[in-house]
Length: 264
Image (cartoon, rainbow, N blue to C red):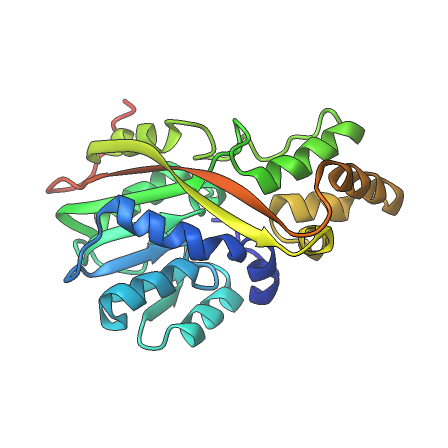
């Protein structure tokens, strides 16, 4: 799983601003209920973890992320939650420990997404729930990132962007779940948003080097960075504005016994 090397506060300014609307929508769509013991995989600084702890109690929530600074931030912000350092592809829990396992905006950063999903199913009890969401990059539903990459394509038409990442296309998460043995998979989407006071609040987080967009921007010489900024500025309004974001989501039920690879 990709390890973010940026500070937790920088992540908050870049992507964390969407979690207050995304996290509750995700939890509600997944049908997570009181009394469940829940794991947040790829928790980052703890946006979804916080929502789970607030709803169900810290004692019923665990979280994991490979980035040590995110683990520290998540633990500090969510006292009482069992927060551990680790990757989705090798979760540090025994089989059947949780009633539900969720992963928000992390499947695209898994080195092996199918293995990560298989691990999520492994630590979920038989009949439990696995739920995953990831931004819609392929059809441009994540407006903030679409605005940036559209500007990039003005100067670099061949830029790879983020559409090749797991989970970013419609139906991809659901198909992967079925492939690793999760059953009764429900495929859909959820919506989120973030408010910006002005263009500066939109642009400045890109300069922090967070995620693929930030890393790409840092790879450019200064004059090309300025051209990307100008193209973004031209496409956005003056004063405050809201950006909507769509995430693909799927959830399903775990089976009893070992989860097998169904690709063969």
